[in-house]
Amino acid sequence: MNDHRKGTLKTVTPLNDFELFVTAETDSQTQVPTGQRLIWTNRTAH
Image (cartoon, rainbow, N blue to C red):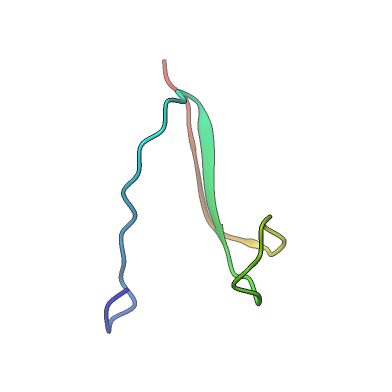
């Protein structure tokens, strides 16, 4: 993230269909998401 709180994430997956979401966690060691979804999207290949 930069000073304006903008950031990017680039990744690859072999999956055609998936869901991506971001949660706000209080613990940096969280292994499963527990908070409310702040940003999310679904990807479905046709």
